[in-house]
Image 1 (cartoon, one colour):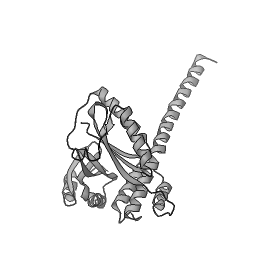
Image 2 (cartoon, helix red, strand yellow):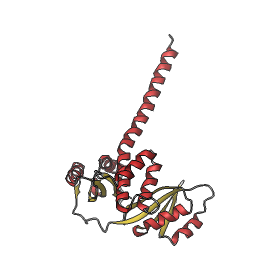
Image 3 (cartoon, one colour):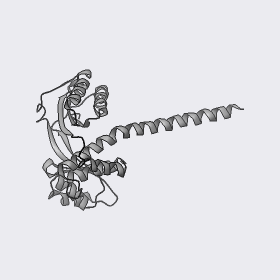
Image 4 (spheres, rainbow, N blue to C red):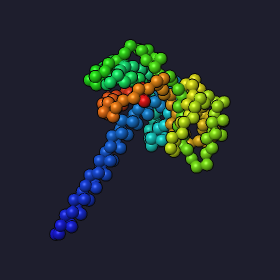
Amino acid sequence: MGVEFFNYIYFMGRAFEIRRGAKEKRWDKMSKLFPKLATSITMAAKEGGDDPESNAKLRAAITTAKNENMPKDNIAKAIERATAKDSESFAEINYEGKGPHGVLLWVECATDNNTRTFSNIRTIFNKSGGGLMNSGGLEFMFTRKAVVAFKKTEGLDLDDVELALIDHGLEELDSDGDEVVAYGEFTSFGMLSKACEDLDLEVTSAKLERIPNSTVEFSEQQIEEIEEMIDKLEDDADVQSVFTNIG
């Protein structure tokens, strides 16, 4: 057998390893993301009913799940769990604190065990060189907003979209590449998300987010350390979202 054959075998093996690594990374992401999406759907259905047409929060949670390629069966089961007699009871709980280099973090969780969640989140903060703050400590550092993202399709006139959404709670429209993001007061969430759907916009996500009132710039090295902490937080099964004041 010639050198070319062994080179071929080597490169084919490397290609297989790369493909397998990419698949394992996707599987790992899905194994962590899907349960969180399911919890979000179940909680929304418990809060406002299992009909997406009349429950804006549930409709938004389903839209986000679909855009993350969550199977329809998983979505249906998550909705069914909301009315099941033996279903787990989840509570929304927030944690506020400082991370590496003084970065501010707001962590939103959904948990069926407050003690476990508090212990896990506190450990991550402490081991990352930060610490938790008293509840409400960052209340005036972040503003809760309705945030609806949709695709910037060919022929879409953003001026027309903006005019159409102003009467439905739109405060700002931000376009970045192929994505457009509509911002509004959190109380306008249902109205704004429904208006985007009525305009036949390709909505990719609709959620309530914590937007920092002022941001801070960090160096590349600092960002890496901060992101390492954020990754640990997001890996926790109870954490739904993490917001920061990174500029």
